[in-house]
Image (tube, rainbow, N blue to C red):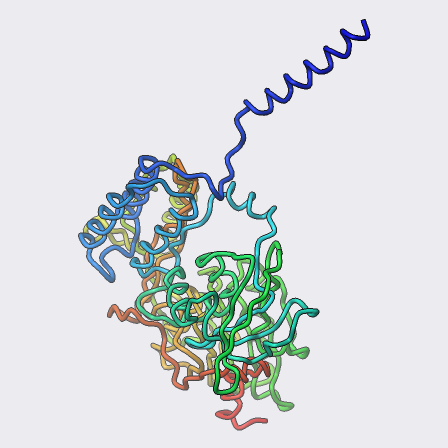
Length: 486
């Protein structure tokens, strides 16, 4: 009996091992390859969705151009690819749409898998400034300090950094033809971009400038789940009165309260109306003559919020139009939110006016100047490549109405408008990659010409690496200089 019990135990172990061996294992999505036939079907759906609904078609380039380009892309998918390889090729394709709201995003399953992993990173953190790269910091405090803060980097793992930067920027969606948004976001996230695109080796080799000579340094990677954020913003101002939910804050720059600076981090969907009432009531009460609005790094948000801000600032009613060529989302089985899209169409029809031209519906809304606590003083607006979407809308209308002096860099958002309003996500059936596609063209009626560029500053500001390390606030310093305050 003891023998039989022992035999039964070993049979059970052998059976369990065979079962474990034969049981299909879940594919690692980082290495799993999809056959060309599945990739073609996903690419066909992407092509059909974009050609059916994307409002940028015909704005910067004609429909036939994109039709031909997408068909060539589908035909080029002749080999199996991983999800990441497929996404990379899609990203390069959508760059030609010149739309900052169109995006290719990894499948949820891929991101969940990646979230659990510790990946190779360089312990040295690099800072791009223009087309050059400098050492910003070292995460490994025990590491050899051969590389020092501020040293210029020539190449990483044999690839020249200027080539790296140009390639990284192709994967950043931007409006029109301007590059400031691409420069802004590549600076913020370069230490993740270059590793994702050029590989994550166990050992890095960096070529750097050492005086007039160049030297090389090899060092090992470190494993992390993610990098800490690179602190690039000017020093935080403790005197700001903050409205956290509204994502804004203000402070007076002088003791006589003649100059207020208003920092709007984003056009929040919450608590903005109350914050504006308090701020503009204070401006009126103190008879403040000058307002500095900081839109740097403001990526947009609520249209209603941006309209509300403009109502306190513009002197004449202004029209703003949402344009769409669809009445329902095409290929609805691959997306969600069609009811919300129809509701938005209905609401804009009620609060504004609808006009249909050649199967395209135009919903125009009038932004009316607010009488109570309206601000009629001098306005200065701080802008950069991170000023996008609703920020560019506000800047466009202030520019057209000659209501502001602009300081900084060209906005990331285009002067004539963008493609947004509502941006549904389509999930491709095989790879599960998500494609963000705008449903509306937001037309800035102040600029009928297609420029392909953002709002240009009256006073252009350029940062050098030393300014960033010192956390200088050059745009605000320029505003103070113009206002003649310390």
